[in-house]
Length: 108
Length: 115
Image (cartoon, rainbow over all chains, first blue to last red; front, side):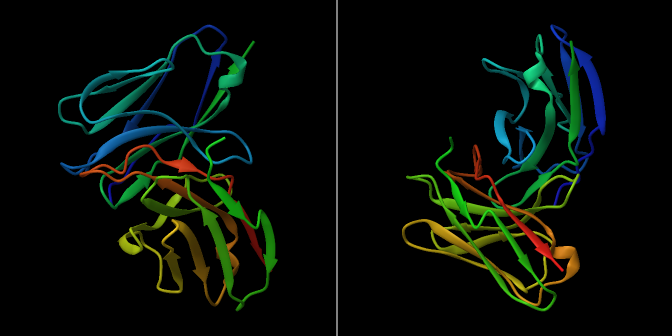
């Protein structure tokens, strides 16, 4: 299984951009990179998925360098409701590894 | 609302007992996976079922077993419970196509406490 490493926590302010980087040095060729958001007492919720380069959707962007050994989730203009734990997930068809999670606190 | 439901939401067991947790997948999904999430940690992959067959497993002992039924509901069974099995158990359903499990749709989890 791939090993993933994320910062434990980070603080931000409303309206700022938040960037969270996940390290996954032993990612396999067939693995995808996915990010999830989790609130207390809830299951994780999908944010974005990518394989290489850059992916953007209505809530976030995902940057993956050519060597794919890391990925960065970018949350533009965060609000108080974005306070949550964010997980990177690396895996493919049948092996999935979550990172330890990054606790993001958005302050007013 | 993801459409994935889990039961029970909370339960308490004692060491050595056995437990069965249940999950009802989102309609149309062909894959279900189970995760153990200890307090303050990320989810740990237990195993995945695709069309009623186990097709992937994490670093969990054989006393963790499962089933997936034709209607894509699923069970997680844990035998000989240990104190360290206390955790939130999450079920996720998805559509497996090619090499990608795709977006995982999680339930709210079953919180197991082992005394």
